[in-house]
Length: 114
Length: 113
Image: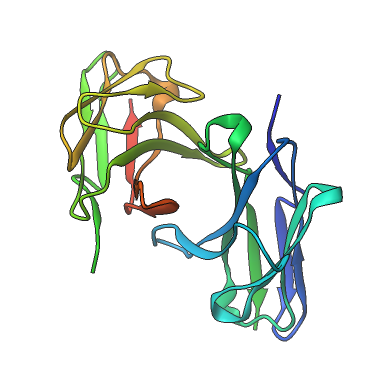
């Protein structure tokens, strides 16, 4: 089945550490890629998105993601995390082959310790 | 500020009850979606609608139905609630002009006892 896979279920970091969250998808053809964040008790917010062009995408709050088409990957990175980055992160994909319905990964909980 | 509003933040219902979850958006968006969010499973699409009175099944439609009588309102209906429908339900909307820009509501946490 076509899907979106996030490699880590829970990541625990110290402040100032670097963060990288993996995301792979299995849809063929044209895809649009997203990372969403959900802070405790809040609604989902868009961190960044990729539609076309430069495969390195910069989002809000210092996050970036790199689309590697050959690897079907869209990994999220942040060079130096803060305590306020504690949240759940979701990778999402919509694909021409799936009628552009937005499909989500299982999510990665990130805990940043002060 | 644009909004997707879900009528209830928390709901507790009994097994077998008919449950209505309401979602209203004020952005004149054409497209609306219902997802459920469960730990370890992420968000799964239940139903969506690209126009008034139009509905399409998502990935997990069993046990659910929807209604979209007006453009701004998209209701999710649990005909006979069961305990395995205990979950967080999220509504989202998007515009045809920016099909990929989804705006999410705050969610309704439904507990079926």
